[in-house]
Length: 421
Image 1 (tube, helix red, strand yellow):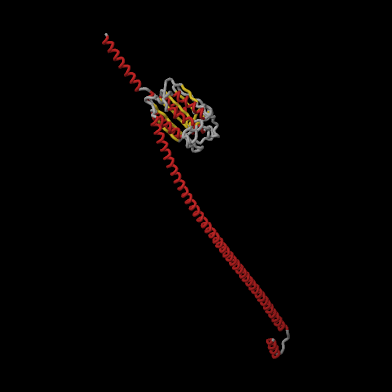
Image 2: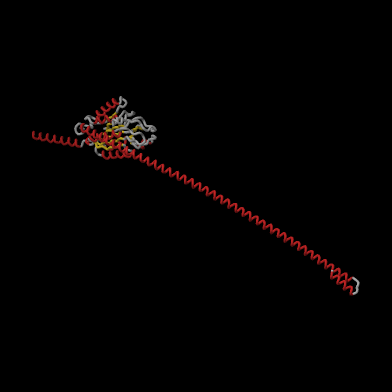
């Protein structure tokens, strides 16, 4: 009996150990997936000083704390949606701890909170849902994936940079499923400070990064952050959080998920040196770009002057051509006028000659008519004289018939005398 009891106890303990091992191996907290977005380089409004740095710092830290990180820096709307869909695929069936960290411009409209992409250009209320990303889209991904725990951290309560958009001040409380921890950089309806360029991080994220390195519960992390932000801002900014978690969670559990402060300091130093190197390279590139811009400007000015000179020469040529064309036109008009005058003179001469011919013809016709009349009068006269002679002759004959007979000699003399007449 004792042997059986010892065997039963042995196998029971083994079963409990195997069950404990299986539970630990399959623990949802072993799968940590975070979507980290930081938007700073906005295209249509002034850029933010630290949102991009906040996202990079959080992505690096969460990666060391066991999270598989999807990082988006200065994301447009399309890239933000792609990252959300990528997260959906990685969360599916994992029962994971899912986290969203967002730093950048955020706004609320009709009690909905929106992350603002860098390419957003908001002019009216209707532009907000079309050009931004609703945080509820991420929450729906968490719900559909069946995550065990959700963590949403929003350092996104800057002043609204789109004054023409009728959005409310700050962010609104979120409706999230059970097992969700919500953290805002400031209380709903208020705005958060972006920090200065020298600090490298926004006020809220600066203290969050420090507290995440310490082995403590998630609730204690954000309590400490709230205290330090309130003190540093002299009460102007008070972070706010809301929890519906049903189990314990620690970013740094002091065992599996922990951070060596020396390694972190070394990495921070290396990151700072890298940043300074990149800054120096960027400055050198900027100077090169300035020099290239100066050269391009000089070339542009030279080309502009050359173009202006060509335009002046072209204008002078055009004026000369216009003047020559005017002279040609004047000469053409002068020749046309001379030709017209010549034609008029020729026409007048022809008309004069025609009139002279008509006058001469009329004179000739008149002369011919006169001659005809004179000939007619001569004819009539001749006929009249002829008829008169015939009448006289007839009278003479008649008279001779009626006259007494005379001696022949006398008649001969009379006949001779008449013939002479």
